Amino acid sequence: TLEKISKRFGAVVVADAIDLTLLRGEALGIIGPNGAGKTTLFGMISGTVAPDGGRVVFEGHDVTRMKPEHRCRMGIARSFQIPQPFGGMTVFENLVVAAAFGGGRSERDVYAGCAGLLDRCGLADKANRRAGALTLLDRKRLELARALATRPRVLLLDEVAGGLVEHETAALVDLINDVRSTGVSIVWIEHVVHALIAVVD
Image (cartoon, rainbow, N blue to C red):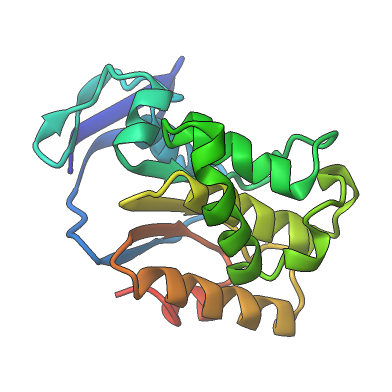
């Protein structure tokens, strides 16, 4: 739940007392022009941007001042509009870092789950490839897989369909619907509206 969340940068108000409630298993879509404050809203939910007013409440806990890594371990995960993999690491190593650090587990305990995620996200044949050498579609798949590796209860997706061709977008929609079917709640910012409405309530 967001309760009157507000944020300004100088004279520019990017969030003005926003109220939002996301139910368990629900998928919400956010649309709007560039610069409207959509990604800033995700920053306030995930903890990378401090709000100027209001509260972020997750499963009854006020997390407004909680660090991003603590929110992640509670179950709030996000992707970024521009994928941000650890480029010098392999695809599998990227998932291990996300699962162990973001999920608060030991490295040894996450290997099997990460291997399963590679297969689920269509990256199994690229497990040992350097993340920095992936195509745009595969970087977006990795971005989603890394978020899923933390075992989220809420998944924030930031324009994951941008730059993809039609069949790639369709594959991504299928993957996100598969994630949603497991009970993960989703908030998706997207300009590709037909992809968005294929997923969200």
